[in-house]
Image (cartoon, rainbow, N blue to C red; front, side, top):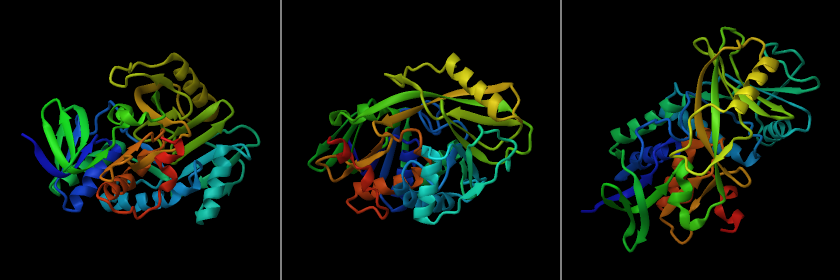
Length: 363
């Protein structure tokens, strides 16, 4: 027997949980489906924390989306977004330095150029520029996912997990979704499949690659580590978070191992990655101890240009999807959920995101 909804969300991680929340808040009869339990550690939305920043070096057009995202995180729960600041280190003319300054100029954002040795807890290479954005910070990733899901269910949404999606199809009455436990119908559909997007959207042949990434926690009792940080070094981009409870999280943004199946990908440490992280900590974070306390893995699903794909499914005005968030998408989860519901129900998104459309890949 088929149950019918106003809207179904496939995938209830960072973006999908937000879409389910926004749909439920609008009074839609909605269903979220996921193979894994809430705030699981098998995809891209886990590992305690994610940076959030307004002066977006990747592209200045992201800034209005971020401004809306900030407002939505605060609306969801004002304790989630921690405005601890973020320091950027890079050579003049680098992607990070020029991108941050360009976004700040275009959108009148508060970014400081700091004198040398202002933040002695960090040791950048000689001649590096240091920028500081006080309004940047971090998000507690699992708490964010659970807050969206809890409030979605409280507003009337259904959330089914431990249920794998086999297929979905457009029908005369909307869409049909088949899982390993049953079939569901809906007027509209949002696909937020993360590392599984290529399978859920396989007819599009999206230009996506899945990379296994590593996160590390080191012992740190140095009280100076109160802000996030991002280093643009000649051999890679590295980032980290404020120290909490005697530990500091650090990871490499660049690189990563391509995996063919995120379901079976190894969760083990990688010797080369560990060496690179340990070398970075030793050379640039003098207050961080050499003892590594924890390691986790997650996935980046990258597009060819490392920008998101957010669009309606070609030929289906009632199906919207987000894919290829390329390792910098979680901070946008709140606003992307809102945008995807707008698209799926036939409304124009309040925030312009045409630059993230599928057409740029000629699909």
